[in-house]
Length: 110
Image 1 (tube, rainbow, N blue to C red):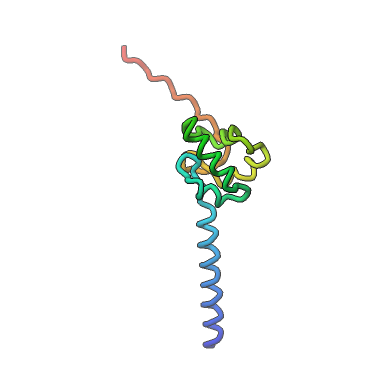
Image 2 (cartoon, rainbow, N blue to C red):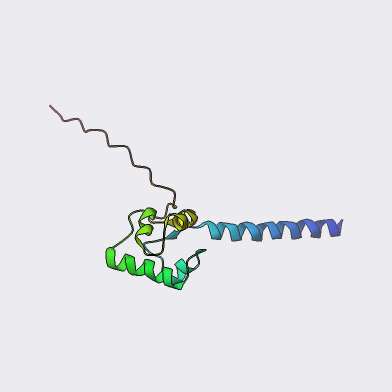
């Protein structure tokens, strides 16, 4: 019984460690606040692309959408789609933006 308990405890610990690593890996990187070092942590982004992203942001202002990343030299459609799930510009994730519905008109008082 003692061996069974140890085996279950070890399995639960391993599961906890794996889920903690996955949770940390899923947090999107904000293009508007990330350092070059943060960006280098993304698959496909090396030092030169990371620096180009930061320089583009400093020169042109914040990215309005994740799609604006294509304005950075060396980043095309294929790379953008690979990076999209890992990126955000507002902390909400890198899914394509859906335009908000127009606000209802405000009724004027007579």
